[in-house]
Image (tube, rainbow, N blue to C red; front, side, top):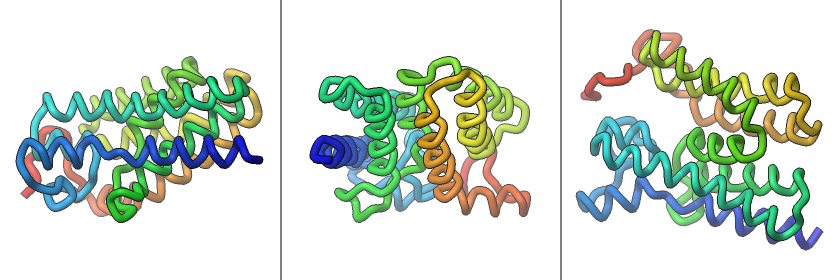
Length: 198
C-alpha cells in the first residue's frame, strides 16, 4: 500500500510539471491558458506559439509519462504498478497541482506511457488517430480516436488485463478533458489544424 501511494504521488507530481505553461511564460511572459483554446498542451502551443516550441512540449510531455513508468519499474518492476504510475502522471498533466488543477488534455503523456508499455496497441490506435487527423484536420477528433482505440487494441493484443482496465480510465479522462471539443465537433465549430484561432 505504501509503495502504491508513493508511486502515485511522485508520478502525479511529475505529470504536474506543465512544460507548455513554463515555456510560454519564459518565452513570452504570458500564460498559455489565456490564449487560443485555453489548454496547456502541445496543440495550443502550435496555434499560439509555433511549431518548434509545440514539438518540444509534445516530446517533453511524452517523457513525463515515460518517466513515471520508469519510476514504477525501478521501484517495483511490476507491470500493473508501471501502468498505474503512467495513469497518475496523466492525471497530473490534466489537473496539475502547481497550476490550480488547470492543465492539458493528456494525449502526449498518454502516448509516452503506452509506447513504453503497450507499443503494438499504441501504434495501432495511433495510426487510426493520424489518419483521422490527416483526413479531417481535427486534432481533437484524432485524439479521441486514439483514446477510444487504446483499450480495444490493448485487449486485442493480449496485454495484461490490468492494462485494459487502466486504459479505460485513460479513455474516460481523455473524453472528460475533450468535452468542449466534442461539443464543438457536433456543432461544426471545432478549429481545424492549420486554422488560426480568432
